Length: 65
Image (cartoon, rainbow, N blue to C red; front, side, top):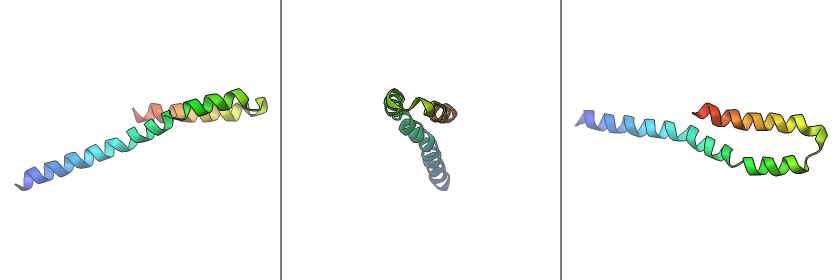
């Protein structure tokens, strides 16, 4: 009886641990339309700042997997 309970708790903990980065990637993925809109209207002098943000979002999503 204790083994089953332990296994269930372990499985529950692993599922919770896995869900954290997946939720983060999902939230980061919602930034693409906003960044695309920002790129269309942003000051060209701030181009490198926008590129850094795009790289940070893409790396965030990539590193989750």
